[in-house]
Image (tube, rainbow, N blue to C red; front, side):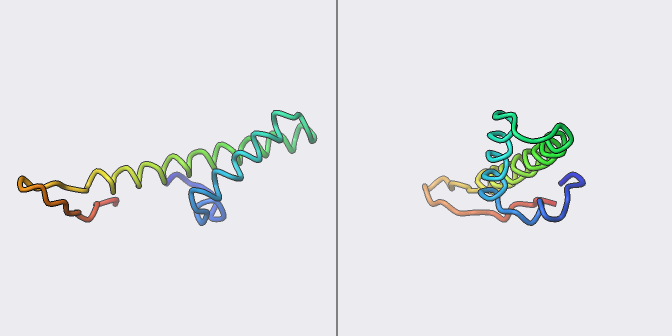
Length: 81
């Protein structure tokens, strides 16, 4: 992942998305000071980046599910490095 703060990289997809949604609501409502809004926007960008990376990891894992000619389904470990 990009150079994201450790507290963001430690978040699950669901927790990061919930925080991102909270930030979006806060910014849409226009609450807070300008400096705080800029900082919240920057954190939102980092959260979005983290969510996109987690979704890509999940997509890669799903893509590794393989169906054999006889119809049996198996999985192959994804090389995410």
